[in-house]
Amino acid sequence: MNSENTIFTGLHYARLLRDRSYHLEAERLFTKVATASRQVHGPEHKTTLEANELLEKCKERYVHVFPDRKVFQALWYENDGETCIVTGPITKPRCKDYERIHHIENNLIVPAAHCPVICHGLISASHLNGELGSRFRLSVSAGSKKRTIHEPEGRNESRFS
Image (cartoon, rainbow, N blue to C red):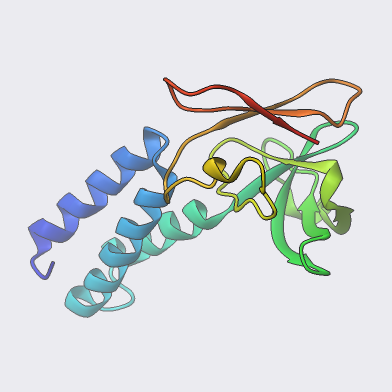
C-alpha cells in the first residue's frame, strides 16, 4: 500500500466498511491507510490527517448508562472490569465543555451499537464468544437486569443475568 491511488482507495473502502457497520474491520484498515499515508505523504498531508481523524473516530466506544439510558463515551475499565470510566453525557451537537468523567458500575452500562465487547465467565454460554467481528444484538428489559443476546441467523437466543 504505497501508491497514492492505493491509499485513496483504501481510505474510501474503510469509509464504506464503517458506514455499513463493520467498525472493527474499518478501524484496522484506517490504521493501515494512516500508516501508509504517513510514510508516503508525510504526517501533515491532508490524506494522512484525514485517515488519522477517521481512525480516532472509529476507536470511540459508546455505552448507555442506566437508569436514564444516556449515552456516554467509554474510556477504560478499572477494578478488573467492575467499573467503567466514562465521559459525558454525550449531547448532539457534542459539547465536550459540559462532559464530565464518571465511574460507573459495569452492571449499569450497556454497550451502544457497534461497541466491541469481550464476554468473560460464560461457562454455560461459551458459544457466545464468537470470532472477532461476530455480530450479536443485545436488548435489556426495562426495569430488569435481564439481558437478551440475539444471535446471528440460525441460532437460538440466550439469556444471562
